[in-house]
Image (tube, chains in turn brown, purple):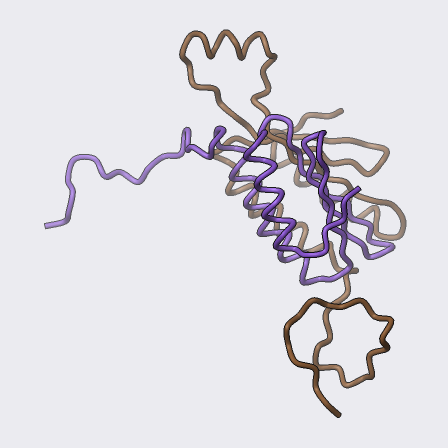
Length: 120
Length: 96
């Protein structure tokens, strides 16, 4: 498991997405962690020091795993870059065609929208 | 595996799950470009909530959820701010 700084992590994540377009999956996991063992945490709590929490982010393509840890100061910047990467790569999802006049076969899943259906 | 059909319900329950046990709750996202599918999972190892989709608009909603989680996780438990720098309001109050 490779622990990286946030920026190299984002670069690696981008290349993971790029390499798994034809085949393969990308998993991303987010978890809160203070990155300290339980013993250290108990000591810190006893000493009255505030615990610093960080967000642990892991990504894998099934073969390689990378991870990074983001603190409250960098989380906004990381979040913005992460959102950009996701937006750029999740292109295979279907776009909603609400203005389509094609007859929708009843077998389609309900879209859950509350718009009134157009009548022919 | 509990698949939730309503996005709003998924978000609300995930947030509840996280607030109840921030140390063991995790948020997993799985994306398959070849199938065009996105699956989200939030679990605290006791209960599991999942949401799957193939719609682009759900990706946008997921980004907002990502923001929520990032914020919740990098702050302390109970969502208290820790090291966030407040814009200085020390000293002078109002502009004169």
